[in-house]
Amino acid sequence: MSSIRIIGLGNVARALAARALAGGNAVEITGRDPAKAKELAAALAGATVGTAGTAPAGDIVVLAMPYAGAAAVVREYGDALRGKIIVDITNPVAPDLQGFVVPDDSSGAQEIAKAAPDDAHVVKAFNTVFSHVLEVGPAEDRPLDVFIAGDDARAKARVSAFVESLGLRSWDTGDLFMARALENVGLLELGLMNHSVKHANFSLGITLLG
Image 1 (spheres, one colour):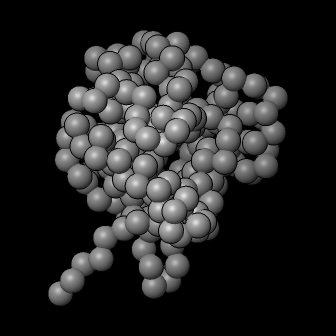
Image 2: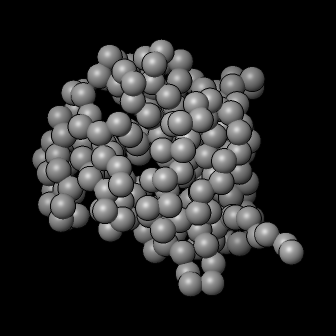
Protein backbone atom coordinates (compact mmCIF):
# COMPACT_ATOMS: atom_id res chain seq x y z
CA MET A 1 0.00 0.00 0.00
CA SER A 2 1.08 3.59 -0.62
CA SER A 3 1.13 6.84 1.31
CA ILE A 4 0.00 9.68 -0.93
CA ARG A 5 -0.61 13.40 -0.76
CA ILE A 6 -3.41 14.69 -2.97
CA ILE A 7 -3.05 18.37 -3.83
CA GLY A 8 -6.49 19.63 -4.77
CA LEU A 9 -9.99 19.76 -3.35
CA GLY A 10 -12.23 19.14 -6.36
CA ASN A 11 -14.19 16.18 -7.70
CA VAL A 12 -11.13 14.26 -8.93
CA ALA A 13 -9.40 14.71 -5.58
CA ARG A 14 -12.46 13.44 -3.74
CA ALA A 15 -12.96 10.43 -6.01
CA LEU A 16 -9.30 9.46 -6.00
CA ALA A 17 -8.97 9.87 -2.24
CA ALA A 18 -12.05 7.75 -1.58
CA ARG A 19 -10.81 4.90 -3.76
CA ALA A 20 -7.31 5.17 -2.29
CA LEU A 21 -8.61 4.89 1.26
CA ALA A 22 -10.82 1.94 0.32
CA GLY A 23 -7.71 0.28 -1.13
CA GLY A 24 -5.83 0.58 2.16
CA ASN A 25 -3.64 3.54 1.24
CA ALA A 26 -2.77 6.40 3.58
CA VAL A 27 -4.15 9.66 2.17
CA GLU A 28 -3.14 13.22 3.00
CA ILE A 29 -5.33 16.02 1.59
CA THR A 30 -3.91 19.47 0.87
CA GLY A 31 -5.35 22.57 -0.78
CA ARG A 32 -5.09 26.33 -0.78
CA ASP A 33 -8.16 26.58 1.45
CA PRO A 34 -7.28 24.82 4.76
CA ALA A 35 -10.91 24.84 5.91
CA LYS A 36 -12.09 23.08 2.76
CA ALA A 37 -9.20 20.60 3.07
CA LYS A 38 -10.30 19.75 6.60
CA GLU A 39 -13.91 19.43 5.47
CA LEU A 40 -12.98 17.05 2.65
CA ALA A 41 -10.72 14.95 4.89
CA ALA A 42 -13.49 14.67 7.50
CA ALA A 43 -15.99 13.59 4.86
CA LEU A 44 -13.64 10.86 3.66
CA ALA A 45 -13.12 9.30 7.10
CA GLY A 46 -9.51 8.25 7.39
CA ALA A 47 -7.73 10.96 5.43
CA THR A 48 -5.43 13.42 7.13
CA VAL A 49 -4.79 17.07 6.29
CA GLY A 50 -1.40 18.31 5.16
CA THR A 51 -0.06 21.85 5.06
CA ALA A 52 0.31 23.35 1.60
CA GLY A 53 3.93 23.79 0.54
CA THR A 54 5.39 21.45 3.16
CA ALA A 55 7.05 18.11 2.49
CA PRO A 56 4.45 15.39 1.85
CA ALA A 57 4.27 12.51 4.32
CA GLY A 58 4.43 9.90 1.56
CA ASP A 59 6.43 9.40 -1.62
CA ILE A 60 3.56 9.86 -4.11
CA VAL A 61 2.10 13.32 -4.73
CA VAL A 62 -0.99 13.60 -6.93
CA LEU A 63 -1.70 16.90 -8.69
CA ALA A 64 -5.51 16.80 -8.68
CA MET A 65 -6.08 20.27 -10.08
CA PRO A 66 -6.49 22.06 -13.42
CA TYR A 67 -3.36 22.23 -15.53
CA ALA A 68 -3.28 26.03 -15.36
CA GLY A 69 -2.06 25.98 -11.77
CA ALA A 70 -0.12 22.72 -11.62
CA ALA A 71 3.36 23.88 -12.59
CA ALA A 72 3.07 26.88 -10.26
CA VAL A 73 2.17 24.61 -7.35
CA VAL A 74 5.15 22.37 -8.10
CA ARG A 75 7.44 25.41 -8.12
CA GLU A 76 5.96 26.59 -4.81
CA TYR A 77 6.70 23.23 -3.18
CA GLY A 78 10.23 23.35 -4.56
CA ASP A 79 12.68 21.15 -2.65
CA ALA A 80 9.83 19.65 -0.60
CA LEU A 81 9.22 17.45 -3.67
CA ARG A 82 12.80 16.17 -3.92
CA GLY A 83 12.80 12.42 -4.51
CA LYS A 84 8.99 12.31 -4.75
CA ILE A 85 6.84 10.70 -7.43
CA ILE A 86 4.58 13.40 -8.89
CA VAL A 87 1.45 12.06 -10.56
CA ASP A 88 0.08 14.46 -13.16
CA ILE A 89 -3.60 13.87 -13.94
CA THR A 90 -4.16 17.11 -15.85
CA ASN A 91 -5.27 17.75 -19.42
CA PRO A 92 -3.82 21.03 -20.80
CA VAL A 93 -6.67 21.51 -23.26
CA ALA A 94 -7.33 24.97 -24.71
CA PRO A 95 -10.64 26.58 -23.70
CA ASP A 96 -12.00 26.24 -27.25
CA LEU A 97 -11.11 22.51 -27.29
CA GLN A 98 -9.13 23.04 -30.50
CA GLY A 99 -5.75 22.03 -29.12
CA PHE A 100 -3.48 22.46 -26.14
CA VAL A 101 -1.98 25.32 -24.15
CA VAL A 102 1.50 23.76 -24.16
CA PRO A 103 4.16 23.85 -26.93
CA ASP A 104 3.59 21.53 -29.87
CA ASP A 105 6.69 19.49 -29.01
CA SER A 106 5.76 19.05 -25.35
CA SER A 107 2.98 17.97 -23.02
CA GLY A 108 1.49 19.13 -19.75
CA ALA A 109 3.41 16.44 -17.89
CA GLN A 110 6.71 17.44 -19.50
CA GLU A 111 6.14 21.10 -18.62
CA ILE A 112 5.38 20.10 -15.03
CA ALA A 113 8.57 18.01 -14.96
CA LYS A 114 10.56 21.13 -15.92
CA ALA A 115 9.21 22.85 -12.79
CA ALA A 116 10.00 19.91 -10.48
CA PRO A 117 13.27 19.17 -8.67
CA ASP A 118 15.74 17.17 -10.76
CA ASP A 119 15.37 14.06 -8.60
CA ALA A 120 11.57 14.05 -8.63
CA HIS A 121 9.83 11.70 -11.07
CA VAL A 122 6.73 12.83 -12.97
CA VAL A 123 4.30 10.11 -14.03
CA LYS A 124 1.25 10.82 -16.19
CA ALA A 125 -1.85 8.91 -15.03
CA PHE A 126 -5.64 9.14 -14.55
CA ASN A 127 -6.10 11.91 -17.14
CA THR A 128 -8.30 9.69 -19.32
CA VAL A 129 -10.79 8.80 -16.55
CA PHE A 130 -13.64 11.18 -15.72
CA SER A 131 -13.97 11.88 -11.98
CA HIS A 132 -17.46 10.37 -11.64
CA VAL A 133 -16.35 7.24 -13.53
CA LEU A 134 -13.39 6.93 -11.18
CA GLU A 135 -15.71 7.31 -8.21
CA VAL A 136 -18.01 4.50 -9.38
CA GLY A 137 -15.12 2.26 -10.43
CA PRO A 138 -15.17 -0.82 -12.64
CA ALA A 139 -18.18 -2.99 -13.30
CA GLU A 140 -17.85 -6.73 -12.70
CA ASP A 141 -17.48 -7.45 -16.42
CA ARG A 142 -15.59 -4.28 -17.36
CA PRO A 143 -12.20 -3.28 -15.98
CA LEU A 144 -11.42 0.41 -15.67
CA ASP A 145 -8.12 1.15 -17.38
CA VAL A 146 -5.58 3.77 -16.32
CA PHE A 147 -2.79 4.60 -18.77
CA ILE A 148 0.54 5.81 -17.39
CA ALA A 149 3.73 7.28 -18.84
CA GLY A 150 7.02 8.25 -17.24
CA ASP A 151 10.79 8.13 -17.62
CA ASP A 152 11.61 6.27 -14.39
CA ALA A 153 10.74 2.56 -14.32
CA ARG A 154 10.61 2.33 -10.52
CA ALA A 155 8.33 5.34 -10.27
CA LYS A 156 5.99 3.84 -12.86
CA ALA A 157 5.99 0.53 -10.98
CA ARG A 158 5.00 2.37 -7.77
CA VAL A 159 2.20 4.21 -9.55
CA SER A 160 1.02 0.99 -11.22
CA ALA A 161 0.83 -0.71 -7.82
CA PHE A 162 -1.14 2.25 -6.49
CA VAL A 163 -3.54 2.08 -9.46
CA GLU A 164 -4.11 -1.61 -8.87
CA SER A 165 -4.77 -1.01 -5.17
CA LEU A 166 -7.75 1.07 -6.31
CA GLY A 167 -9.21 -1.95 -8.11
CA LEU A 168 -8.24 -0.50 -11.49
CA ARG A 169 -6.05 -1.83 -14.30
CA SER A 170 -2.76 -0.12 -15.14
CA TRP A 171 -1.20 0.07 -18.62
CA ASP A 172 2.35 1.36 -19.11
CA THR A 173 2.52 3.35 -22.38
CA GLY A 174 6.21 4.23 -22.28
CA ASP A 175 8.38 7.24 -21.44
CA LEU A 176 7.06 10.64 -20.42
CA PHE A 177 6.92 11.89 -24.01
CA MET A 178 3.90 9.59 -24.37
CA ALA A 179 2.00 11.94 -22.05
CA ARG A 180 1.28 13.99 -25.18
CA ALA A 181 -0.56 11.00 -26.65
CA LEU A 182 -2.47 10.46 -23.41
CA GLU A 183 -3.48 14.12 -23.34
CA ASN A 184 -4.77 13.69 -26.89
CA VAL A 185 -6.87 10.81 -25.60
CA GLY A 186 -8.29 13.21 -23.02
CA LEU A 187 -9.16 15.62 -25.83
CA LEU A 188 -10.66 12.75 -27.82
CA GLU A 189 -12.94 11.93 -24.89
CA LEU A 190 -14.15 15.52 -24.77
CA GLY A 191 -14.87 15.33 -28.50
CA LEU A 192 -16.86 12.14 -28.02
CA MET A 193 -18.74 13.67 -25.10
CA ASN A 194 -19.68 16.76 -27.08
CA HIS A 195 -20.40 15.28 -30.52
CA SER A 196 -21.55 11.67 -30.34
CA VAL A 197 -21.86 10.09 -26.90
CA LYS A 198 -23.48 13.27 -25.54
CA HIS A 199 -22.60 12.48 -21.94
CA ALA A 200 -19.54 11.57 -19.86
CA ASN A 201 -20.66 8.19 -18.51
CA PHE A 202 -18.03 6.24 -20.43
CA SER A 203 -14.37 5.28 -20.36
CA LEU A 204 -11.82 4.23 -22.96
CA GLY A 205 -9.78 1.10 -22.38
CA ILE A 206 -8.08 -1.99 -23.78
CA THR A 207 -9.85 -5.13 -24.96
CA LEU A 208 -7.49 -8.09 -25.33
CA LEU A 209 -8.40 -10.40 -28.21
CA GLY A 210 -7.49 -14.07 -28.11
